[in-house]
Amino acid sequence: MEQSVLILGGSGQAGSDTAALLRRWYPTLPLTIAGRDLDRAQRVADELGTATAVTIDLSRRDLGLTETAHSAVIATLWDDRLNGLHYAQDRELPYLSISSGLLDIGPEIVAGAQKSSAAPVLVASHLMAGIVVLATLDSARAFAGVDTVRVGVALDETDTGGPAGIADLERWSSVTSAGLVRRDGVFTWLAEADARADVRTVDGTTVAGQSIPVLDVPSLALATGAPNVRVDFAVGETPSRRRGEPASTEIRIELDGTDHAGDPLHRTHHLVHPAGQRPLTALGIALGAERLLGLHGVRPAPGIHMPESLIDPAYAMERMREIGAKLS
Image 1 (spheres, rainbow, N blue to C red):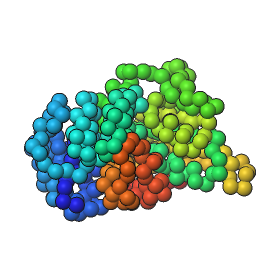
Image 2: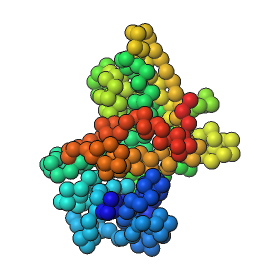
Image 3: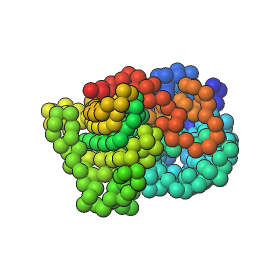
Image 4: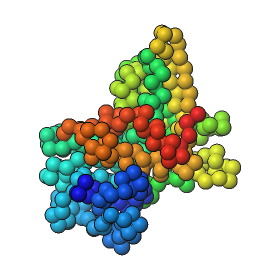
């Protein structure tokens, strides 16, 4: 592939880790690391090899870039004016975003729909860029029918991400303290008191959290058909840090339904990464970019897509294990 992948925010945590994964998988894939600080972007590009560094201006529709051919645009930061998306659409390039969240997704969806024939748009503003959804869907393969999905994500308080990730969490929490669930087939908003919940970690301890309005809820509900879906999110001290080890990320997946013989089935799994959320988020972005570029599977058709509509959960689990995640 001669044209480079433009990674907006490529010198940040999510962007640089994504670039490193893509470089590991595809040593000759050209990458363009775009950021506000050219020296920092250049350091990332130099470490990667076969990469260039540029500065961007997100207030401009052309991003302040001279005309250079790219193969895709990957936004690992909050594209508040949608100029990254406009840049991609104007050039009919695939686009991926991770920062809109459920509460900010409206303008992005409208912009994508208005030019739905231009190129594929992957909306990956899920927890860890879709990794939680993909892991849950892989666990659901044992079921003929799923009645209830309950997911709890425990994030260590020292591992909330870089400045861009922290800003996303603060923006979402400033909009609403309500939670979103699917209950008896109806998407329902929960008042703050009802949204509170504890997330149980792999050692049996709990971290105080709450239901949050994330894209994972409708993605899991509509992909599994489950009438009852809840995703709880907790930030605190994870068991690994209490043991004096590095902060980990833990994802508890609980499923109820029927097996392929029609008998009741209950499954509980824990997905743990000992290095926290950062590698899982980068993996989610890299899987999406790989799919948009046609490097794993055919290139997707123009239109709006979600991670679960493009990425095979079993393949995602293989990649998770490669980077050190463990499912029990």
